[in-house]
Amino acid sequence: QALRSAVNYTIFNGSLDKECTRHVSLIAELHHAIEHDELRLYCQPKIQFDTGKLCGAEALVRWQHPERGLVEPDLFIKLAEQAGMITSLTHWILEAAFRHIYTLEQAGRPSPLAVNLSARDLLDPRLAERIRGLFLTWGIDPAHLQFELTESALMDDPGGALATLNQLKALGVQLAVDDFGTGYSSLSYLQRLPADTIKIDQSFVGAMIADQESDTIVRSTIDLGHNLGLHVVAEGVENRDIWNRLATLGCDIAQGYFVSRPIPVEQFDSSWHATLAA
Ligand code: C2E
Ligand code: CA
Ligand code: CA
Ligand code: CA
Image (cartoon, rainbow, N blue to C red; front, side, top):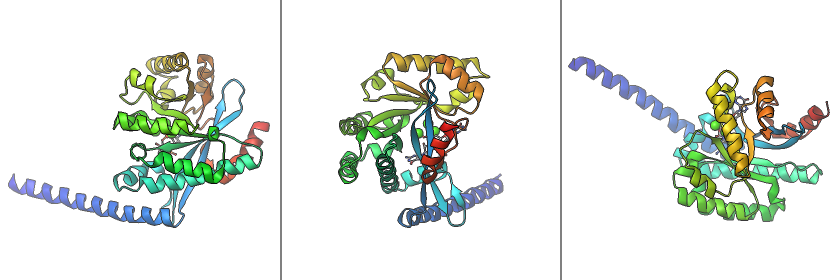
């Protein structure tokens, strides 16, 4: 028994060490990536159900790693948060987003772009000030910038997050509650948020055709959003059945692989106009 636990102990610690070393090297690499422009901005279009027209896009970051290839954000956003790097990561994304919005405005084809903020971002007292500075630099229309915040990010420090959101809202940007239905925020807290939009989590949307309860949750969320005067976006629209069902339920906006996967920001503009014209 003693031997067995000693062996377990060794194995456990061995793997923990390895995990730790891997994290430490990833953190160093991510630091390098932010400094040396290995990050890439991808965009996923949002489409209006009733017109079928493009009504904006979500900015999604990727990491073009020299050896690992294209790394998905699920693998490094958390790490960046834990390592205290999310502020510089968000700053990189904001710069890229402002540049993209500026380019579209200059081309006479403006389209709102949504940027994801993490819990840490919302607790940064200088965030709103930094964004105000970017507006002064780029001179873009604040209505062309949206922020997406998850319910759980808001719940880490509801008072602090609310203060930041009110500052952002005062700049004239749009706010969306992301992954709606997966957090624990109360409806009364949501009511106090200066949000314009809710995004129904893709877990419900993806399951709604096969699962009656998911369908009910989606339907109720659309009604709730509309009754609160909010736009309702469905995420994870993967096929025509889901698209049709959501259209029947009166959902406003679709985002998902059925419409398009996220694409590099440089390709976003042209490919989208081509697709919609077809
Ligand atoms: P999210 O904000 O919920 O973004 C939606 C995710 O769903 C994206 O994954 C998107 O590619 C994926 N998706 C879109 N349509 C479909 C679909 O039809 N089916 C399925 N199965 N998935 C779909 P992605 O790009 O891997 O991003 C994952 C998460 O990483 C995001 O979830 C967001 O929380 C975070 N993230 C991404 N970019 C950023 C960023 O710039 N800043 C911050 N703070 N977080 C980011
Ligand atoms: Ca999002
Ligand atoms: Ca989401
Ligand atoms: Ca998510």
